[in-house]
Image (cartoon, rainbow, N blue to C red):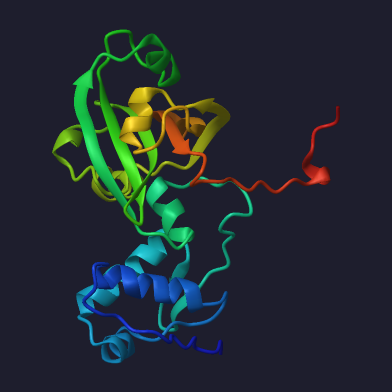
Length: 247
């Protein structure tokens, strides 16, 4: 039987929510294959409620860092954090980096999108989409500006949902739509005055820009531009000669 992980540290009444503190303790200490303590043991050790423990564990399970095994317990899963690009929401990405994500919603409205978006999502010319613009923060610091489009047909009443949370988790839980693949292109640019202002950055700050087209069961459901502050975000890519195309 796998050895159970020991979780040193404390959970207190500081500015970080208790479930986030507990999530970080588990994520930082658990090693692949190790079982984490039971809910009851975690409640007793950290003097927190069952709902706090469950929220911390459910978040780690949703992020793929823990897995539940019926009748055996909950175990840490081996997952690379920054070794390569991976399909994840901003929220999941920041959690894996040990940061606390949050969001400021700037815009959420239904519209007929630009031709580029219509083509990317495979929509009719008059189809409507939700246009969302959000500032994404890590530990309270602006990290990225996102502008994204989602088909109204796939996500009705999206504007009445809690858009400050992970959209990928919302899509799965509320709509039964799981984004399972994406094509992403990355380049560098300098921040315009408007973008710099929203990211609380100096004008012309270097940015990493990601254009992503995401699908769920081969259906396009997301088209997004994400602009990350280059002084606060980096990408690590694993390169393998065996997987490289012949030139």
